Amino acid sequence: MREKLTRFMVGRNGNDALNRFLLGLDTVLLILSMVFTKGLGRVLTPIAFVLLGWTYYRMFSRNVLRRSEENAHYLRIRDQILGRARVSRDQWNQRKEYKFFTCPSCKAVMRVPKGRGKIKIVCRKCGTSFMGKS
Image (tube, rainbow, N blue to C red):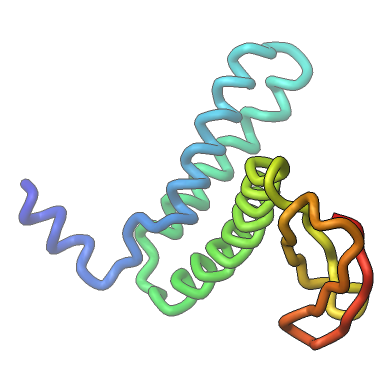
């Protein structure tokens, strides 16, 4: 049986990161449609089934190039969102030891040790210097 499934999936896209996200979103929508059986549930159920159909279409598609482009686009967006969240979390964890400044010209974020008083800060990315109180 496993060999038949392996032969069937040869040349097909299979399960990628976007499909895993879509399946998770589909599960959440189906659970919400069960909880809200009246108005909202009647809207979410068809959306969930269309999303499930699209997920399986992507999974069994033989157009691997197009599906990999979709997956790469999803990964770029996901990494941008998670990258911003990671930077914010790191800044929050380091707030007692460092003060963070944003370059006025290139918007790069720099950190300087706290307790140094008024200092001249030079951006490593563009070379702009400005004053800041640490």
